[in-house]
Image (cartoon, rainbow, N blue to C red; front, side):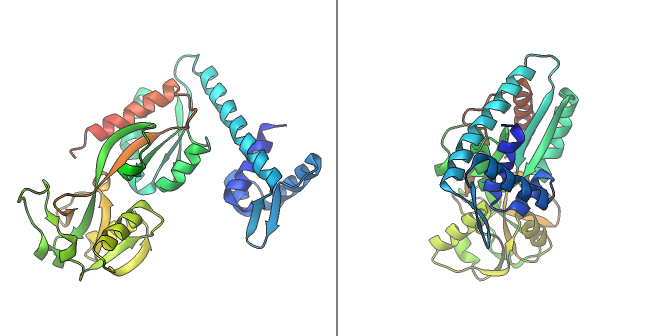
Length: 305
């Protein structure tokens, strides 16, 4: 059994599609399809059931993938520990982060990290937090920076900060009529969501955390939001909001301060999510990973929240 065999089968299982897995593995679809068929013949059992919408694991396939993930995880852990015996710090880190948050934080983190640890390659994997959590659980990433509601935090990893969920708008938007200051509330201007239900919103897809939070807030008020665009990425929604196209939910860690934009707390109690670094359950923290973790922490610590 070769390592690539494990990686190919796991990739097809996770993507649920040979074409998507081939793209992820930088292989031709026909080559991967032929490989899977040949490998199943060698094993004497079917790992996948072909369907009109892709492929699904058989019972044998589920058993294979479960063990393959463990073997891949152990292989990578041993490889990291062996490389960690040598100096200087070298190697490779697979780091996961959302595109939205990453565009603000990663340039500074990488700049600091490369100054201190120039011989470590950082490979970025951009997904939303829910996908990153699944990939960490599968042992595919060394670490990931994710946002999650406080009730979902299980204590594993390193809790970095409470990240506030804000509303982004332009300073000439009608929402300014409803902005409040102080009054025992947050330390930034704020609005009561119930006062602005008649205004138009720019919403993220509901599978993303900001989309889920927005839905929860509107559900608590028993209201259906008016929206200009739905199913936007967080970055696109915020960019449109800064141009006066509507109101968008965003994170404090991702704001881009400007004279034309304003970021408003949601209610006196405000709204927060946990921002944390998470790792595979059996993950080994190499010196490279610890150094990168330190760089992330120090960049966040320079921000005023």
